[in-house]
Length: 127
Image (cartoon, rainbow, N blue to C red; front, side, top):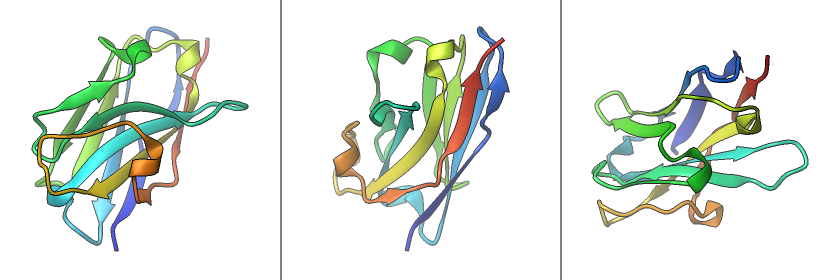
């Protein structure tokens, strides 16, 4: 059974950076598409980014393009989300999720596509 654990969240000032990590256990990530999602208080969960199994395809929601970068290190069984130029509206609980797929170059940011979820890590952007 795949288990996901997020880490790296915290409090950061506007314009600052954070890197959140998603560490997997119980199975190798070699066969899993990974997505990052976030949920702010009173709002619906939103897809932020995803990365294909091969790492060749990445996608981002428009509001984070050019500021966030997703990457994966299958040898470490870990996926990262580097967040730069953070804004107060990025404040949310960030979740990683995984789904096993055959196609190695595809990903999507639809939450219903994913089977495994982490517990989330809080990111707060405030001065």
